[in-house]
Length: 112
Image (cartoon, rainbow, N blue to C red):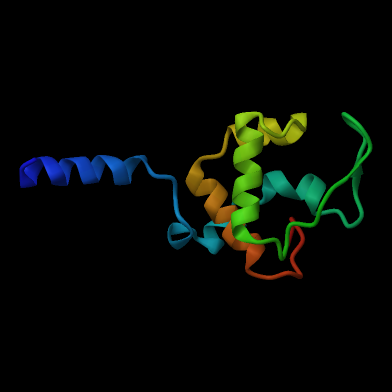
């Protein structure tokens, strides 16, 4: 493989990779929390659909856990219908930004 082909191949691989933690922007994540606050921003909130479910606090979770959970909702691996619908509209960059924001401070709730 010549040098030009190697550079093109590397560029294609890098462009197909999801956003990394290094690319994550916590301040951009803060701007994307509106969709989270309706449930995760209410202390002690429980959903009633599809079953009674205690909504977890996001602040202080590890960023990689939040990203993996959102990816699992998006792929259908996790089945909560509201979270699947929300995650379906998120890009890898959105997920990384949200995760960076919530992982930055364990005292945050979804709406703060």
